[in-house]
Length: 242
Image (cartoon, rainbow, N blue to C red; front, side):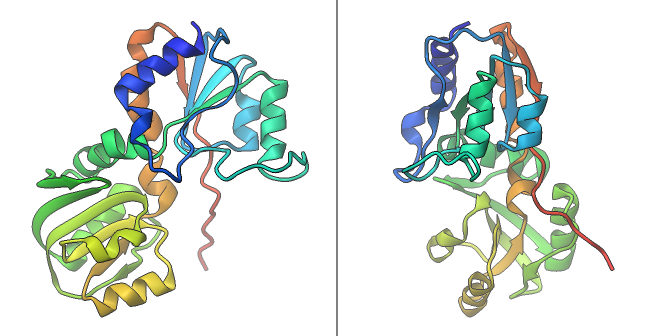
């Protein structure tokens, strides 16, 4: 099947026009006229993943391997080192990033992984109406995402309205109508700001909250008649316990 036909299917599923202006979703490596017989799905691209794939594979990722403007391809540096290996194996790549966040990822993780109904959806943010003790809720979240520890800012003992977005969402903090925010990549100054506006925070991790991308997309690709494998990249972080 030609990549153009698969791209059309993906565009109907999660329109690429929905991506943010700063994003780079779409066909990043390869040709629409390329014929492929196997699709691999992953949140990201890493060397181990590329080595595991067969030649002539279409790799569909959540994060774009080419994000900013490339001025050179020096093969000893990232991402050129990975792009070189992909081209040698004729591995094509389509990224589905912020468009997929809005159409599928946030909703799936909120309902299927966390197990809550969405009371309101506003772009990248899903709102959950709950009424639970903060500590109990935080442990529940930690278990759902398989977190090694609960990293949080606790501003109240009771959680009633939760805002949720996968990946890195702290730039959205000031626009939220909630008393607790679940997102990843929480930095020190994000935590300080949240505390100052009385917004509880739970860091759900970037990889931990988005690696469900592959399993969501696999369910939608089954009817194409192609071999689809989940071949997710590894979390770049490791955790050492004393």
